Image: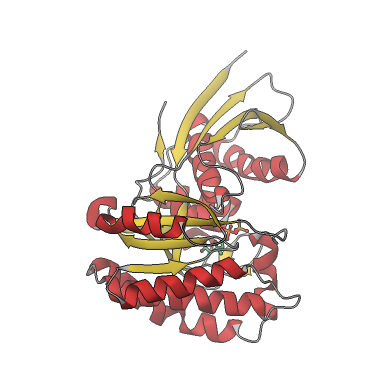
Length: 325
Ligand code: DP6
């Protein structure tokens, strides 16, 4: 039996300028560019082993065998890798997260970034960072942004090959911390993939997309200049715009809970009194509260005291996806 194996680690990321809607759903080509930061301390570790004796691809997540759509999505990436490496070997994929599932941290970003890196390396391919980002994107759009280090921009690109993410600043550029306030969602949420397909049904989506270059520039500059006030204003604005699109889609998507909105008011109040904090929310009810590192302890404590907050996860800025064996 011949086998070839590699293990990779990738961090999830939080988007500051959001990806919402595709111009090509199958290829995950987005309608707009986006900006994010990787979340240090949280990670997915994935081992891919190609074997000439395996009959079919298999997938183990946190020691549980996964079948159905989860496995199909992984095999889709393995098929692309097999095509590039000119092999027919099936693979065993084993993946672990160190953050709780359903914690409002998009696990698909870290998962597909780690899968892209581990599977291409196990197949003896040496892909550039941009090629890895493209490959990860095919599994989950936001995964393209978990390949490069630190603060990252995903350019929408003109075509399949140039829609990839790159680092705009390294992880140690700015001491930003994400305090994720976990709000117990009462309703089952609609996944991002379904949500992207609905974005175009909102009459607000065109305006959102047309305005994105402006928001990208403000956010990019705020990060590069470490201008927290400008940063907080633009991430809240961008998150609110995306949720406006979600709420006005057909059928409508309402991810916020009462506690979500309660946190918005608190965060704005704290900021008006001089605490450097700003919020952003992905496709869920949990609120990511960004702050300068020296205030993280205080922000975490304040969030824990708010009604409806069951837990707070704290993460600094993370590095690139990497091979660990
Ligand atoms: C709201 O990358 O999770 O978090 O490509 O279908 O896997 P798929 O979608 P996904 O969408 C992320 C949406 C978002 C905003 C963002 O991360 O930019």
